[in-house]
Image 1 (tube, rainbow, N blue to C red):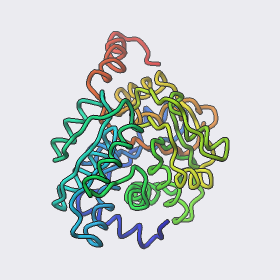
Image 2: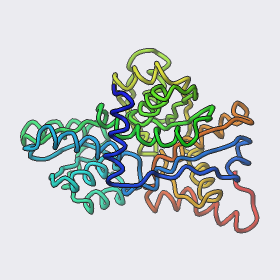
Image 3: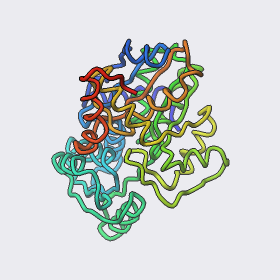
Amino acid sequence: MFDLQQLEHARGVVGAAMPPTPAHRWPLLSERLGADVVVKHENHTPTGAFKVRGGLVYVDRLKRERPDTAGLISATRGNHGQSLAFAAARYGLPVTIVVPRGNSAEKNRAMRAFGAELIEHGDDFQAAREEAGRRAALTGLESVPAFHPDLVLGVATYALELLRAAPDLEVLYVPIGQGSGICGCILARDLLGLTTEIVGVQSTKAPSYALSFAAGTIVTTESSDTLADGLATRIPDPHALAIIRKGASRMVQVSDAEIAAAVRAYWTDTHNLAEGAGAAALAAATQDKVKIAGKRVGLILSGGNIDFDLFNQWVVPDAAAIGAGKELA
């Protein structure tokens, strides 16, 4: 999909808009998992999530190769839309974002604040994606998919940063929504000639990639009703699946309850806020605690854009219990 020189160039494009995100070793997390744990903090980007990198690289190429493009349109549950809105504003492009009804109110406000025109349509991401395609055909706007080589190239820059800073990672847990993050990690690892095991993480309520990984072909699901909206995918991208099946060792499925516990653990152990997808890697590593004992483990905290109501539901009651001297699960 790209070579190391192209990845280095993409890092320069991203670096013009934001500094590298930190990769920290947190002793309390290491104690919790019985492993040497390093967290890549993609919750510290200008949009609070890793996808901003893909938007910057995608729009940079678009403006260089097709400077007369009228504008962008895409579908999202939030972080992809914020990425495109942030990047489009830097390059002077209008952007329209289609979200499903009932989408995160905070993410909707953030996309508007970054300059996007927001349209609500359908009951899930797939319906919103189909509406974005219909509107693109009618308006002539550039339709930006959720998975594209330039998006993967952009988000692979976080893997480049992490794997250069910690080339001795033995296993790396990566959440999967549409697949750009894990594909970027796989391709960056291979370009650097490393042997890090890469493990994909999915929700038990949105396991389309996990099912497809096991079956060796595309498997869709009828619903994706996880509260971790960044994992809520019903239809895998075939190109992403091919990269994942070739480069990932296995998949771990985590429940919303396990994700909630991981959000709480990030809050108590590191004072970092993780959204559901951002905490999924920690949830999977916790499930794999026996397997990873004593190993050097990487976790992708892919974003921190969690709704206040969900944070209140998942974190606050347990935080109060901790304050009363009770142990956190």
